[in-house]
Image (cartoon, rainbow, N blue to C red; front, side):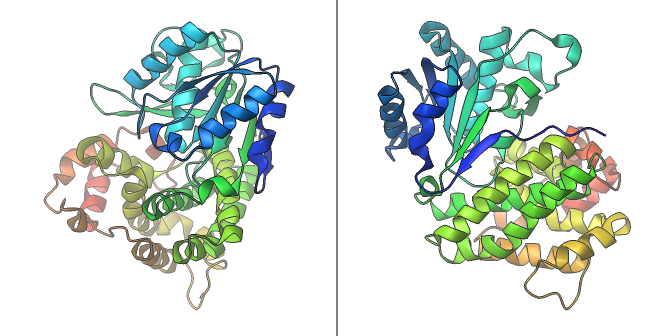
Length: 378
């Protein structure tokens, strides 16, 4: 059994102010700041640049990417890095910013293209260190700040590539809840549901360990109590801080245990029909929970203890709660609600069966099993 220890993190309102000192402590003198255009409008990247400048650190902003960063976006960031020659990367934003920063770090540090780093990198590929990096998430869901994987889409096909290497992990994460208060309600919903999927799938993954399950269980405890509060009142700072922390714990669980069938089902919906990841995985999750009941009933019964009403417990209770959470979040609970009622389940299932994440599902899933789950989701 192995366990990748978590990075250092600072949490609490106003902790963005530490970025200059933290960058300096890691030896940073020239920082590539990676932040998407939507964040630029909030003023957060400008504030980070000011704080870095006050620590006598030169900074260059890269913002030429969007949601679901692609291999082309990474290549554009690598070109900026080649010109600026940073000795550190700071990623500020949602999962897209954090993943794009990791992708840039891979290619800038080791060369080649993003395609060369698909999958978990093997020890035999040792090429030295990558640039030290700091994560400043502005959403609460992806957990990218506490894991070494970058999720990058192939610009030509849209296929998502999970690219992982322990050296790509951020050295420090700054969890400043104040940066999450400007999120649109839909982003809050999509990222929050994503965090739930991470906690639940990593908890029952075939690769889970006692240590990873502790992280997943703590994430789930925080989410079950606080995500509904955030969805009801987006300005509930205490609940938002708890969800942000939960996302970080789930990221550590993913790093050590991976995910499962819901993520395998979600990726084809994003690739083929451009369904946002949080919506796709949230829609799939109740169906995968029911499928896993034969293997995970005791685990799901345990998790149900954290739900407000636990008159019943087990896979069915958990799946019903997840469906109600989607409704509270204003997200679709069926493919028909996404105008995908006529989607080709067989084609989606063929792609789902190739997804690496699905190989960690506690109850094995074949192409025909995936097809049945898509049919149930109609």
